[in-house]
Image 1 (cartoon, rainbow, N blue to C red):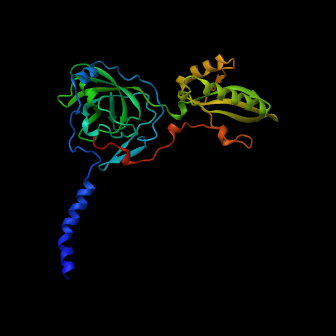
Image 2 (tube, helix red, strand yellow):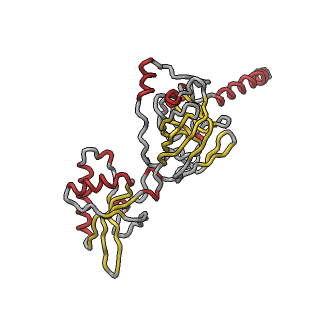
Image 3 (cartoon, rainbow, N blue to C red):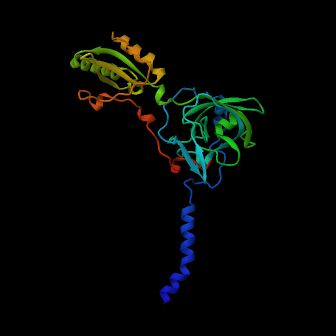
Length: 306
């Protein structure tokens, strides 16, 4: 009976502990703040460091679910955008989130020119203009947010400093999309040669793979080479192809082939959807880059603190 009485008195304490545990954030700070290490030299660097170069990167594996939910509200990710221009309120986020993962799995750095947006595909590059002073800056969107009030975009602390609103907290801005991530239909395939004999196709495939491996910056040129078998009028053709590749890498790939006195090939006009045949192994075929495989909705992957 005494034990029961003791347990009964302990229940409120246990409940409070459980609630406190559930409410614990993954962030060390309860309230956001300016960066801890703001030396005069570091602040001067922010004003002179180069803007990110807008390029079309592969769509991130994380942070690009078709829709996601935060605090009971559902948001859609607008994949495949080519145009976006909108005015709204910009805020900034800083030390509380520094060193933590963004929605696409990268590490947030308050001193980089990055941003969070609720619906743009990740990563995107946008030009943000402070309408009060007409200062503009290119930032790379790699996070989700802001989820407070009517804010349109959340900028890194460094971006807010560069745009001149770090001390006031928010600003009316114009956000324009410059470079959206690559989608599946954007990737191309290059056909180098076609052979009636499988062995000839295999030899060329291996030669091309060695060309890419021997390149000085081969780590940046990991593109698949495969053989597609097609039958026409009773004749088997074994087509040696490279792809899928991003449009901006085609000239470099063809340049490497020409440097080794190989046929630079032709860029196929339409996306290629390859089905392995009995003579074509799975290892020969790759039609979808790993970076654009489908993603699933996960609130855990969102930086909901912003």
